[in-house]
Structure formats: C-alpha cells, structure tokens
Length: 109
Image (cartoon, rainbow, N blue to C red; front, top):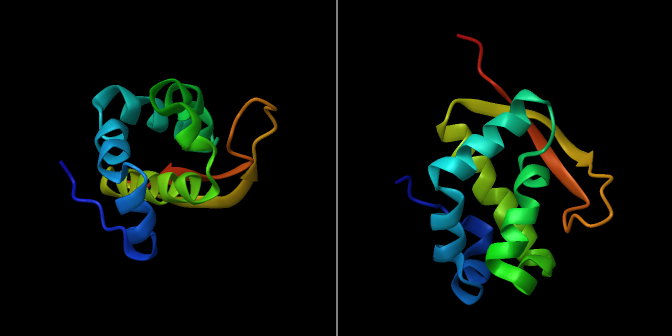
C-alpha cells in the first residue's frame, strides 16, 4: 500500500484516526468508486462521502478531517495516474458533508 505523506495534516492525522482513514480509502472498491467519479468529471470525495459517513460517522463532519481526506484522495489518485483537472468543484447535494471537491483526470497515454 502507498504510504501517506501527511505534510500539513500531521496533527489531524495523529488525532483523528488518520491511519484508519488511509487504510479505508486504499481499499480496491473505494479506489474504483473514486476512479468512476473521475471518469464522470466529478469530485472523488462526492462519490465516497456516503460510505465515509457509514464507516466513520461524525468524524467526517470535522473540517480538518474533510480536508485531510481530500489530501489523501489526491495522493491516491496521483499514484493511480490521475492529475488535478479542477479544484473547488461545487457539490450540490445537501446531505453530502463535502461542499467542494477536486476533480481529476487520467494522464493521456
């Protein structure tokens, strides 16, 4: 498994189950969901948010945790050959804990 580089999220990673979030995000089925969101030009966090809420409940509602998750998603998708397409994409679903997310596209072969 890819090793997470927490950078500015080191404190959040240590306090709020960072290892568990990282392991959960690296599950093959979660990566597949994120890749599907990329294909649809939508933020990966938008697609995985309902599953994140089921797995981690209220932890996902903390701003710093959501930011750390976005940071983790970026590292995972970059390791899978994706790059940032658009940042701050609005997520319109009212029940989604993420208001904005980044959309990624695959590098051209």
